[in-house]
Length: 576
Image (cartoon, rainbow, N blue to C red; front, top):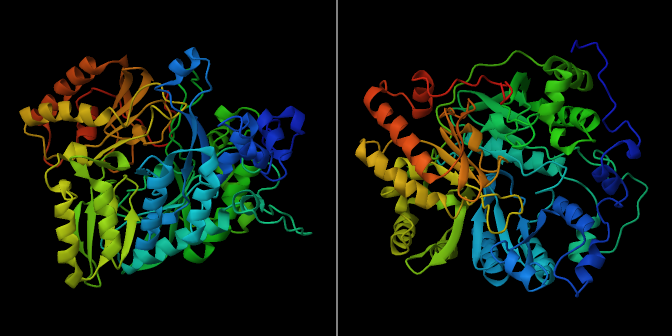
């Protein structure tokens, strides 16, 4: 579309509500997300909330779920489903104090089934929280200055920031900006305090949502900050990505990337993953106006009729990248400068001990699929609590579901190291390169979208793949593998060198050829297959890789060069 051409506005916020999708009417009539949530929470007859309130509660970081392992049995017994709730914390950049960790641990033990989960957006999730415990959980988070605002819903999700275990001054500066961006873009409604903290409504003449308005965003909107050479946040998977440009360790500004998004729907060919497109460079002092300008373009022009087509990536592909860029520039009052050079070398975590610029120590721990739990052979939860009780620095959740014990004074390292050894937290020293670069979404039994196992299955599948790797001498080679229980992109499977998305119980699509640095989508290699076919395909491709790879060549690059899949170019439709 030419920059001067007026776009079709028949499906956006300019239209009357009765011409748009039902979720737009729900948001508009919700009294800024209040709905009837208070009444639903007070209803003791059911362990659920109403369908409309369940949608509105997502804006407060809360999903209603049920235990699908026992759903059919309860239905046969004519019982209500075993409803519970997932609550996701807003934690920009993944930074957490030891005091906050101890509170999270306490809340998880008392109200969330004795487990915490680290997510692929650098935060924590509580699972299996009962309705009558939700307010207690939320108020417990408030006690340590945490909340769950906008962790879900049609708004700005948790803001991500590259985690560097060396913790340079540059990383500290960009993290601070990421935190400010989260506070800047979060919704303002007083409903949060009223519903969860019991506060009285404050009457004001000012707009309650000066940016979002009554109908918020068309769909979720994700923002992330990357600092080359690490692309651990997968910046090309963000709706709005900022790639830091520095000179001699000092931040100059950011390259701006727009339109990333990794979700798709199997039965809807019009849905596809898309990598973000870099549209130019801004100086650091233009960051917040740029956030407002880009978000407002999506707010005003995004599809509000079809939620499957409502993400920013579809707005860009429908209106045209040049038009979207020009409209953002018009709102900014200046043009983007030319893109500045940068290089990514990895999107993984450098596990183990490192020393920072200031001489302090940091240790990146491997947390398989982000699940923090106690088992008889591996009391991880107890071990991390023991460390939090003595640690004087910070914790940092990584975008790869791992955890950094950060800011350790050299004299305190022996105590932390002894606790790690006592509780078996030093597993990164013995794990394969594939396992250390694996990620999975939660999937069954709690996610309502899951069609197959993911978190509970991937560790066993990796064990079987490790046998293949051992045969070919590849056990220590870093290869990214990511699995989801459905086509959505929660574990970013479409960027992995090996991606698996659930189609049915025990059946998956197998994708190959993603970029090791997160710069390239993968391509479907096998559709709707079970474990034997997956292992056979990986035995063939990994064996070939071990024989014919070039020095330094990654597996994702090799399968393209060897002709197993065709390269997917940046920004191209997944179905091309």
